[in-house]
Amino acid sequence: MNCKKVAESKPDGFINIFNGKNLENWEGDPTYWRVQNGILVGEIIPETLLKRNTFIIWKGGAPSNFELKLDFKISDKGNSGINYRSSLIDTLPFALKGYQGDIDGSNRYTGMNYEERGRTTLAPRGQKVIVNSQPNPESENSLKNNIVSNAWQSSEILASLGNQDSLLNYIKDNDWNTFHIIAKNNRLQHFVNGKLMSDVTDNDSLNRKQSGFIGVQVHTGPPMKVEFKNIQLKTLNSE
Image 1: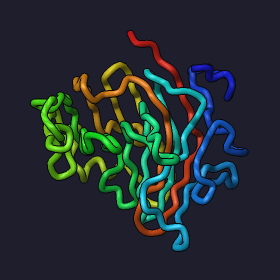
Image 2 (image 1 turned 60 degrees about the vertical axis):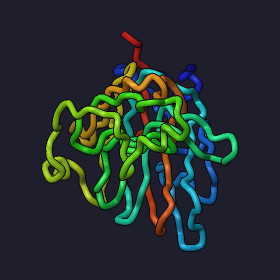
Image 3 (image 1 turned 120 degrees about the vertical axis):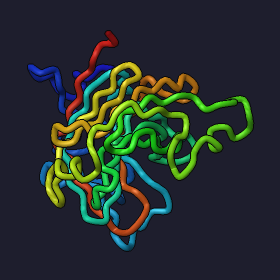
Image 4 (image 1 turned 120 degrees about the horizontal axis):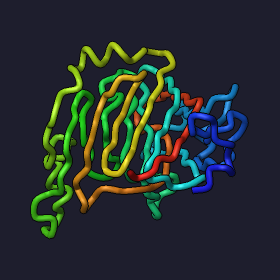
């Protein structure tokens, strides 16, 4: 990945991958995405309701091991997320399949690890887990059959990171929050405002991804607005 196309590295190793001026190196549907006052804005209004989720996708690379930091703010009824190590859906424009750091205005799910168009919930907020492959993967619909109540069944809870109420205290309503993703080898950690919210070790060699695209989402549902700024990426080695 050649990050120097976007910006020079800072002393801490991070680069800005959103310049705050325009959508250079980003691709999405302009009906839903714009730059306003230095902020990347995703918005659905009553006249533009979605039939499926849509993303704006960073086209500067498909990183493997990295840290990603950004600030976000979301409306009360908003539903969004940060996808990474994701693949494009050839038959659909601006669609991604892959890991997601979830964000929602009611903060029921903010910080969890959800796999878009894949294994669904890998780790709810507050869990440290190991994810394994589905049993009998050669059987028909084995992936779908291993999902119950929108959650992947082949996982083992290693530890609690805190209960829902205690973790919720770290997330600010109707204000700016910082999301920090660390993806190194098969371990995926999501932090919000410096607090670890979910921690996944993905041992599912059949379904996991080692690299892929980064993108942010607006979700189907009622009108909403999500804002992003200070989007920074740092590449990591595999040791």
